[in-house]
Image 1 (cartoon, rainbow, N blue to C red):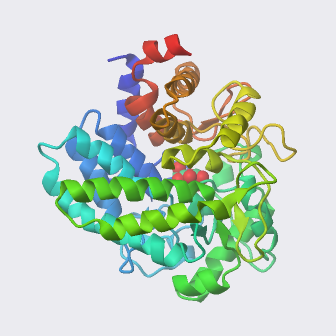
Image 2: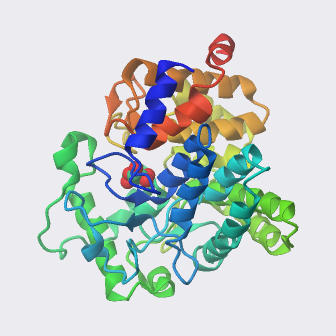
Length: 419
Ligand code: GLC
């Protein structure tokens, strides 16, 4: 074990609030959905019972309709906005009213594979909850074919350029006064702008107005876009969930049906003019016309193709430090502003799983070496400037520590040799 392994473990322990982990102290003081799934994967490298517990606290916050919310506000913290009183979802524990990328089944499968001897009872308890959540995605978000999101935050890639055309149609002028907290924790130039924030809050206020009726939000809400990122993540997760179901002796034909329907919908998010998968505004039918990291999650779902391969190499070779979240050769590229350019270790880790499964072990090794170098040089930051490696956002970040333990820091010498 290296000293970085020790530091990564210490970060997971330090961010543990008793059964759940916060992404980082201060900036993100609650339990976030996909962060928590990654935290579980990280814990699984040294404390399997704690890994299962992380998934259990996440899935325990599931709504009656099957949704697993993007934030669970276990204990109120005035340092975060918008908090439970703004979301006003009447859930207990209090939660937000949207979901987040469903990586949980995929990571549960990886944890289960490490713990088949003792994990069965815990998997058996989690499995129906995962199935209900996937059914919720299918029924509430896949009516147009690919996965639709009702708020940019649902994508997990909050302010990426994919959402600009949908955001343009949202009226943020009537949201009233509020105080942001994020810009008090990190450099405002790295965070979304005030105009963007007003629109984010307007979408939350719409959800409150309709009592978080998801069908109404999809039908009449201010924002509805197809997200390639979640589409690929969910497709992969359906397949992993089916593997888990079979291991438990369950009938998985319903899950297989969801996966087939989603795979059949992929042509709807292929933008031939762009030469890539692309986000689409489902109100107008228009493509976003921007290449983002959501497209490269296609590898995770076995949906790569030669044109996408060429795009990947173009954007990756244009920077030097991981795969950028937006196209470095496009005007909208902003190398330090969150999802508008930076490289995110956690997304690199997902793309790496896909590249490896696509038989591109050479690219997986390169991505691992670049991600590891960023962490070795600078520490466990939230994300990095892909043009010069500058660390950005919050530090001592849970999911960066987790992917160090599970992927970036593993077989490091081998990965560097192959790069
Ligand atoms: C930001 C990210 C989101 C993440 C959350 C907590 O909102 O965009 O993906 O889950 O922070 O880390």
